[in-house]
Length: 309
Image (cartoon, rainbow, N blue to C red; front, side, top):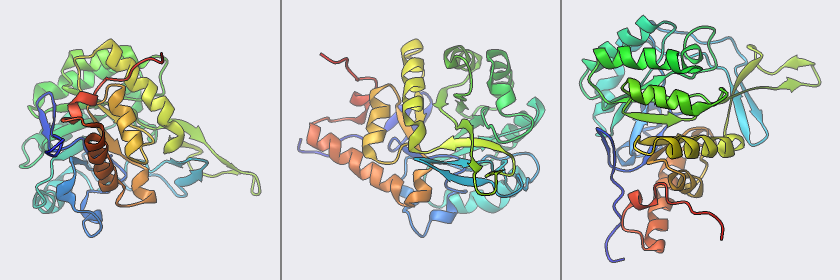
């Protein structure tokens, strides 16, 4: 292949220069990594989830390492949507990278209020509705565990905001497909899956929970097979909806797996804590893979997995 492969991806109304994004809650607001990563090379930055008022988050300890992963229970710590718009967004816009704002809330009205404010801000490419956070007492996961709750949030935010909408779905349900279908039917342009898997850890020496909140969200390589399964199932059920795959992507091979089972883009999460430049390394590896395989466009990989034999 004589020319570089095409990395641009189109997810419904959302255009991205390449399919490698960084996941909410794992990359700060993006500015924290600017000295380590050329932010302009990324396909997009999903900033940490924003609520209407600032939140201090859960009590520590709220992170615990586990085999092939980590548990976290941050509790949506953030400085609030107004401070983000005034203090952070203008600086982040300078890098020319698509900015996706993650929206969280304890009530339907809070989701809508945050989305409305972000919808009026300059430089936001899309909103990701955090319908699946397991680390807060109210809201989040409460909306995302059934089709009706999911649809209610998506429908009302869609009515009040014109930005492309991404619904982030939880694996902590009996069947993710009806929830994905409900989100899409209610107006979500894109689905991202999955959020963290519920879990806990215990210190046998102290005989205490390792997290102050007892349980938290498991992320990292340990959940990749689960995430791949959910992406594949949703792609099979509704192949017309663009999907963003999340969960345990630690290298470019992992990213390719998600593309093969139906994701059009991926988000790098826990790997950012292990290696701050992981997102760029995944991007470079993906491009080299396309060159070696003689594939002209990354889009050709999407959903192209084949059965054995």
